[in-house]
Amino acid sequence: MSFKFKSYFILLFAIILIGGYGCEDFLVPDISEEPVILIAPTDGGITTSSTLAFWWDPVDRAEYYRLEVVSPGFDAPVNLFVNIEQAENIYETDLPVGQYEWRVFAGNSAYETVSDIYSLSIELDTSNELSTKNIELIYPEENAILNNGNVQFLWKSLSGVSEYDFGVSSPNFDNSSFIIETGSTSLDQYTVNDLPEGEYTWRVRGENDSGVTPYTEGTFSIDLTPPIAPSLISPIDSDTIFALPIELTWASETDILTDSLFIYTDTGLTTPIILTTSSSGSYTFNPPLLNQDYYWYVKSIDMAGNESSPSSVRHFFVE
Image (cartoon, rainbow, N blue to C red; front, side, top):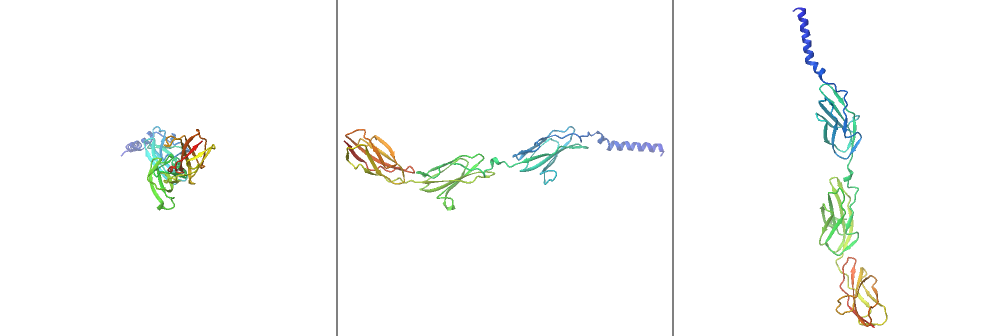
């Protein structure tokens, strides 16, 4: 083989070698100095949302992007949460509460560039945190005395609560055997029927997927027994009275709320000329008419609102 032929062969081989392995690098654009601009989440951002969309500006002539998300940071990473390569310039994922840093690489077959590092904080959403909130009870009011065993319990609704846990016990919740009824409701009310006379404690707490409020408790009692009818004292029955005004007196039980006094001028007790209340056991009466018969009786009303039967009816005549 001549020297001239050998030189030609070597030159041809070199051209083929360069064309097969070097031309691609020569033709691929160099993007190593191109900036990767991060858009969201913003640097130093704080959020309570666990679902995040990582988003950056596209880089011209980039063929892929590689997103990296670590916690707490790239200087001393503990967990690599995201390491994904894709063609799109947005990626959505869920992350737990914590501190994070993230960055994006943009590349092609020959070159690669990287963004700045952004930090991110995901905090606990305390708007639905119930442990520091309290339910406000409305009815029965504290220490109320009721005269009906059918009770509709009411409380103020609380934001963030999905369900309320209710209970009523007699006399309290110190022992599970005292519990009369428990239940759950999404409403701000709960009805219990046919409660007997007694002392009661009721309670409510709010609940959601994140936790519960403390129980709020209230106390009440049920009194279904009417008081004893009052005993009239003076004037005596069928008395004739000359001196005015007239002091009407009677005796009632000690635990009543008030007494109702009825005074008539007709024996049929059709329409009272006086209908008033008194908690002192007496009433000063100035008769509107002289030479007139008057008839009167009293009823008692206790703290629960139970009304007694009427006292005996007495009569007096005013000269």
